[in-house]
Image 1: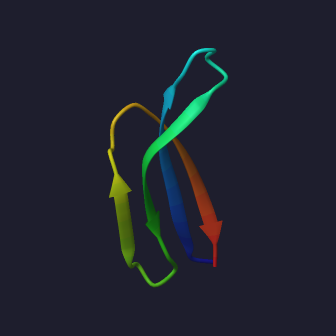
Image 2: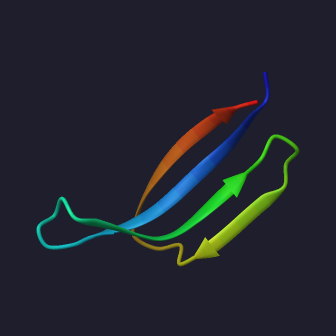
Length: 50
């Protein structure tokens, strides 16, 4: 089964539990990639089944 993915780049606020999303990247099941914002800081990665 093919997968796409989602990556979100976040920075911590004050308190640390306040996270701000500053950028991201998304790839759909056809391989088309969309990126936005800044790609710095901590990130989360999630595979998206097609």
